[in-house]
Image (cartoon, rainbow, N blue to C red; front, side):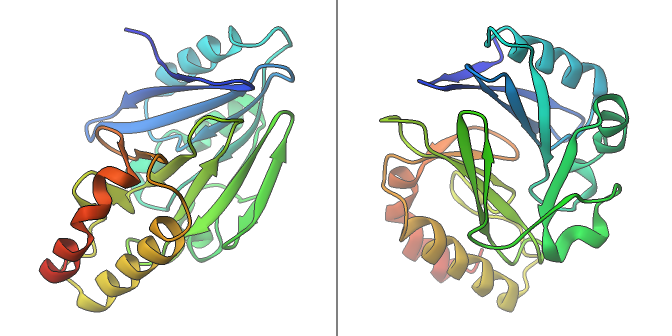
Length: 216
């Protein structure tokens, strides 16, 4: 089974599911420069090494892990982060309000709207409050292909992330997801969540009123 999930004009995106909570780890590799960004070093360092090796085959240049981007501070998304930083020396990124919960120093502290530039692609940070205070979705656009939204645990097929039945946290997360994702990006945008299968904004959009009414 291949780890390759998107082969775009300038980048590839690979994914592997790791750990007892089936966390999705994503790897973006720029074809021309060899720069890579790994999203959520969740667990299973050997599996992450294998993912990096597979991604290295997608570029003619020497591959280099430029950044490990964390979607949020929850333990199941950072279990291999310290080990991968030690092995690769890669910089790290996370949302400002989650920095204190990340188990390594954070080199790139992200706020809503920040854009990080790499050799061949950009990643935009979308701050989605509610699941955690500093959850970040990372958005990639490559040529004519649909937007890719790496949503962490803030948006899944069928609903937003867990807010522990707290109505205020739900309202915050739902509002951010609507205003910062559904109101900004087209229906074709692909949502790549922190667990489970992908979806699109267009698939989920008709259910927004249902989500609001049920409160989760």
